[in-house]
Image (cartoon, rainbow, N blue to C red; front, top):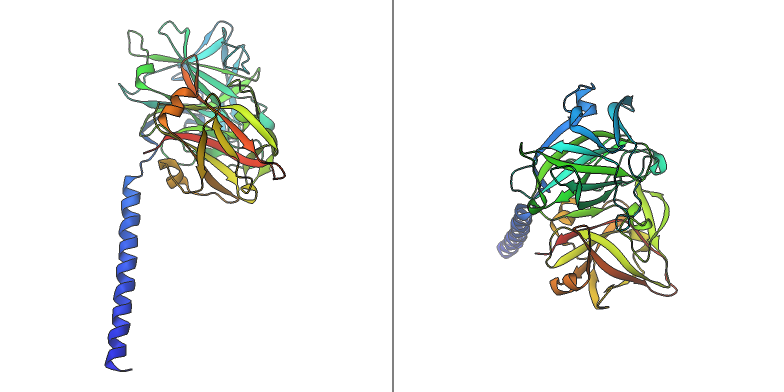
Length: 367
């Protein structure tokens, strides 16, 4: 090898090194701006860790009306509590419970946060879908916090979201942590500094394996697939349940149809993204997303954006798609249900294309 060839080789190596270094620095920069969803997470009671049914803090589960709490005992690797006698809720806009259970809890002071329950998940949603409200200090219903259910309805543990410690939300075969966001202005306290969060279910008997609180770093809100099949947020159009695929509940919006007034909750007004966990094989329909009231078309792409999507990235068999909704469109296409903001949008799936399959959606403010 001549001296010139050696110099050329060294120059190529130097260029490659500089490129790799620049890419590494960019990766570090991107990683630095990502925030975990939660901080100062505090698990108040956990039947898996405690392995006992002590009086405290279970006495902070309080029945209102005919709502009743009892100690169930051990089920599938941990202890849990049994809830009965509540008003069965299947539509949050047309129904408000008179019988329910409240959780007496001290929330982080003057902070946006999330309240968690460890959802005990029977196959095929046998334990129902859980709905939560922030209460007045007299335990009466005040503000809807939303409805939640696990990310799968059968088989072994898998989830999309995280628990209060920013770990995978699935804790064991039959238990997943689910979160209800609240904003600091929603917090109501009694004279002793306690808040009361009401819980009800779509099933007559359901169970809790734990509860927790955490401060929120972002305005991320997760809407599990099953909610889009049902009437909890009173949409005009609903999705159709398909199956369990790659460990997650899969639903779809049918092809050759415009699905109107689909609703998804969000925490705060601003430029929003809707992140949709799309089935990779069925991403090709490329639906048209529009505002329900304005009929304005929103941009839809696969360019990964949003804090949560960058943390979670793609899951096997799934990839993220993103709908971008400007703030003025958010304001014009919003409906409130007892204080919970929901974005209203349409999904137009083209003719002669496959159904549009998905495994859940989230909203988050777009930077």
